[in-house]
Image 1 (cartoon, rainbow, N blue to C red):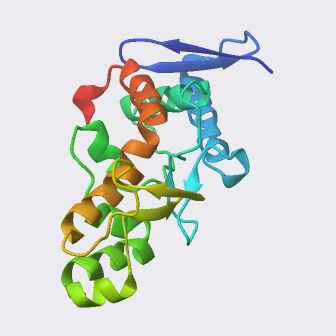
Image 2: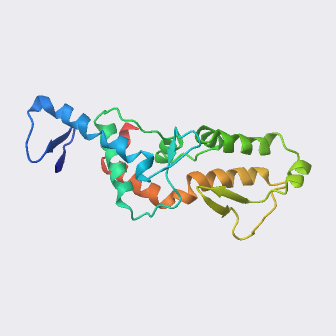
Image 3: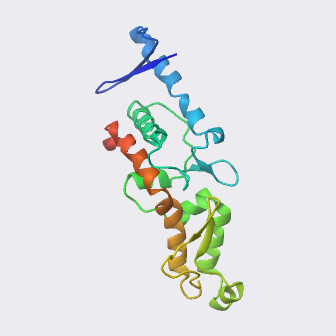
Length: 199
């Protein structure tokens, strides 16, 4: 089955196999079309990584920026918002903050992964420098199945006395650095729908 999308200034119209529906059928076709979101965000596609509880998705660090699926996903999200279609987007608030140019924070990490977020919060608020020294922590982390050095210029940099820098670097890596290419493709597609004023 082939599908054609017509993007008009105020409405998205969808028809299948060249068969134009009646005007009163357009919205039904659009709702059916947006069911592809459920397929795209499912774990089976491998497009996204999920938190431990499998309730929230995020962009994977291993995805190739040239993967057109992220551009197309962004376009679909933009069209859905512009056309006021209700869709299931299992993403943390960090997604929308990034679209608006707002930096994700420790709170966003706590929303996505309470285990990681609370651990980082404990490092900031509860552990003393002596306790961190005993734990022998450094700027190496494990994220999305990969060991990552948060300060490549200073491998195995000790954490003691630099807790705030470590937490900020961890959050930035998870939500920014590791997904820069694929997120920019998603963002490019999202704003192609010209709905920036709707956010």
